[in-house]
Image (cartoon, rainbow over all chains, first blue to last red; front, side):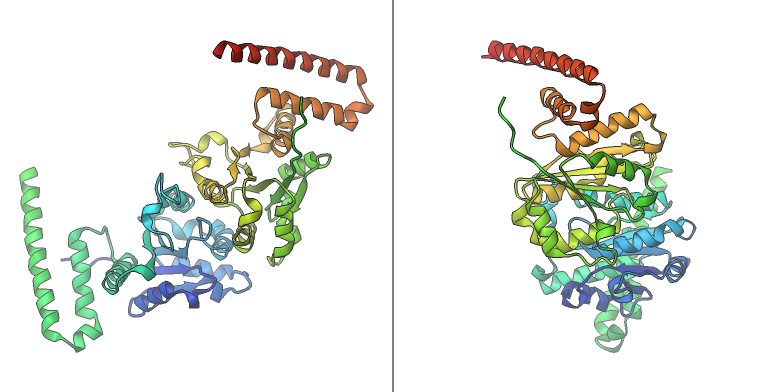
Length: 228
Length: 228
């Protein structure tokens, strides 16, 4: 299989009290071994004075731009808006054909974001301004990654979401089943903790997934031939 | 006819370069003889440090809260978001049962805000976060007042929109035809310029409108009787 083009994510985080957010700490920990850039606006610019040249350079050197924030009154905290108002007007050329993703955390259950739910409107409706920004810059808008009520999740669910988050940041191409399995195999092969311990279990998982993937590819190939 | 309850508007303006905006200057001029409060955030808080107690007092002493701003990336400029993040969490009690209005200016024609238009989504969709805030505080969300492409309007159209803006700020009750005529009569009676000059013309307009209104009220009364 041919190697995909390198793709690097810039995570623009906006959270005014990040040290109190277990969810954001969990996210940050999840990025430690990934080749991504964690860029926390409130820490970087406590007085709100944005360094325009630095920001443009960051946008130029990354391919997937992520806005990561908790819902504050149904949009990002003020610091991200300060950044948008300061930077975006100069970013037309360096964003074209790239990807824009949203990592959204909310204390309210996701099912409340619908007609008749407590929050009335869908998350997609609240995120229209960001979706429109992506389209204006000729970017691909990725389906948002929503982490609702992190604290109420079981440990297992938290880890599952963490892996999904890592995939959201680093998976190249569409999140098809084949691509997702490929991505997962790569993580397993490269993860230092998994390499050091539990070697047999890891090999078993990889072997299992490889077989699954082959079966799936055969199936897809057959279906393709039937269509032609 | 019974006198309606006094209603006072607080216009929370967010515009980072208001002195260059002819539209905002026009709006400001239009409020001069009205009993409303003009509150420009960037002027009041250039460093973004919001005086919470002052803001709560302002909200307490007004009944119609207006957010007035140009679209910056499909929402308000950062200063209004700073205000929202600082104030709203403490405003639950002083906003209940009041009204929230949006005065939006845009350089793009209103018809571009639709599926297939240049801006893709409707203004209502972009304003969902504000609509939801109103509902969360048990406020009535007023249909937004949109001033698109102010500079391209004819003089006559500008004045027409100016009167509509004044009405948006000060009309009590629903904008029915009767209420709008009532409001207009009150403006005519109280306007110092009209009082000083052109007395006859003013009296003629008032007389004409009063008769129109009586005819309309008769008609409504008759229709009401027929229904019963």
